[in-house]
Each structure stands twice: as structure tokens, then as C-alpha cells.
Length: 188
Image (cartoon, rainbow, N blue to C red; front, side, top):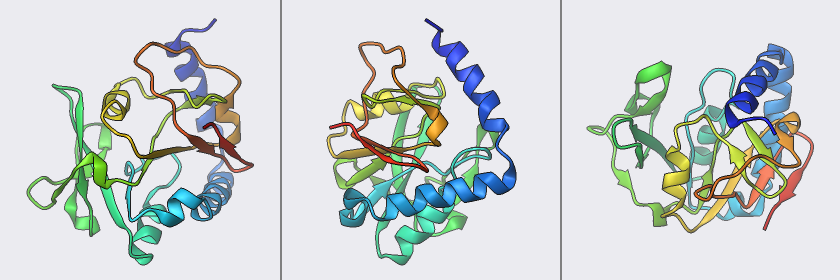
């Protein structure tokens, strides 16, 4: 069995192989599936990360949510404590660029969103399995956050990021569903 590190390394290579045009198309297919997903349609508040280059573009999802009158909350990570808090985002200038080019909410310009106010949390990751387990980017921020979060979860992925089984550890928290460019995988 490959280590999580090997899984991550191999998947990052695959993700880099997607052409810019193909990425736009695949991202669009994934977003269209998300918009018809019942928990997304019902959610008053969605929590999600502002995607970095190479990840599925979430800025368009944020704009769609705003257009539909939904509230949007994005995470602020504390690298020292490995904890994450979500802040309501109402406009783009409330973001600042932090480490590795990650965009996060400015605490002085945003209001904290408690976990119970997020109806649907979009959980990022690199590799997902059919049981909803995932290999993330290695920080453990979402696994920690999910321990205190009890509403709906979904992950967005390219079809090739979904495998039969990933190695899991006792603290790993599965998501309820995975939306890819080809299908909706309902886990629960």
C-alpha cells in the first residue's frame, strides 16, 4: 500500500497534466452538478476554501452563492495551532494573500461564522474514496474542524481523483458525498 505522501505526490503530478482548456470544461461540469445538488440548493450558508491555482475554481461557486442570496464563509487557518475558523465573506476585498499564495479572510474586515451556521461545507482534498474518506493536502485542518461540525459535507473532485480505497487513520472524517465531472457519489 502506498503511503499518503506517495498518493499526494502522484496525484499532484496528474493534476498538473490537465490542460487549461480541459480544466475550464471539467470545473464547469462539476459546478453544474453542485448547483443541482439538493443540500447546496437548500443551504443558506456554505463554507468553502478559496481555491488555489490548479484546484477546482471555487470563486465562481462563491459568486453564484452570492447571486442566489446565500451566505458564504471561508476559512482562516492558524498554522501554529492547526485550527481553522470560518469568516463570512461578502466581497472580494475582504481577502488577503497569506502563506503559499492562499487567500484567506481578513479578520479585521470579516465576522466569524460559527460551525453550526454552515449548512453545507465543501471539503477540499486530493484523493477521495467511495466511502467518503480523503487524502487532503497534509495539514489536517479539515479533519480537526470536522470533529466539531455536524451539518452536510460534500467534496468536489475530478473523476480520476476518486479511487476505491485510500489509507485511513482513526481521526479521518468522511464526507457525505463527492461530486465529480461525471457523477454524484452519495456516501451516506
